[in-house]
Length: 195
Image 1 (tube, helix red, strand yellow):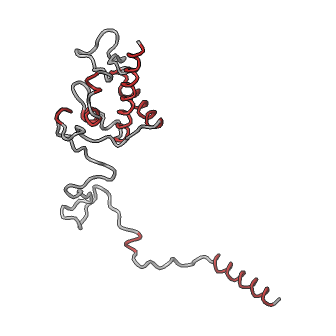
Image 2 (cartoon, one colour):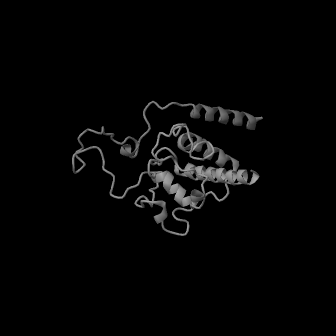
Image 3 (cartoon, rainbow, N blue to C red):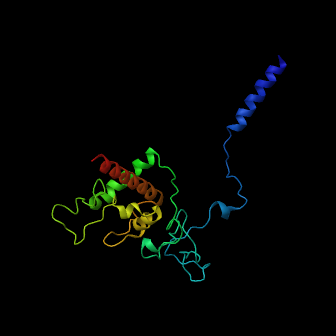
């Protein structure tokens, strides 16, 4: 009986201590680490050598999540180095989700010029040609012969009238777009055999 009373009193004392509020703030050992002095971007900062609160990143710094394209200096996909002619496709076998994302990107960015089936007859081309040179068919033998790295280079850097889509399409989605283009090419081959 005495043990039960002792346990109840100990539990009640513990609850009282846990629910206590501090009347004074907790002591901070390194206050400058908790609350560092913030500066406005146009404010003067005596600590900096140039007096500006805006810090210039060190030379060669790369933003988090950014990967520079190693072949940006190459003019054409034909001059890309390596057996794969550029980067190797990290998507070995595209699943349905990859193809759906690739199709969505294709419908958004490629269909206006290259057409729904990739024949180069998009809505921008129209019944009366609006370009001096119509966009190429992505299901042509020439583009079928290109490596995935070459197609990636065209999407990233652009070519001819086609501008760069590096800022519109994420690098991973470019590979999914290429997988979808390969499926369009397979479909075209099967369609020709059936006819």
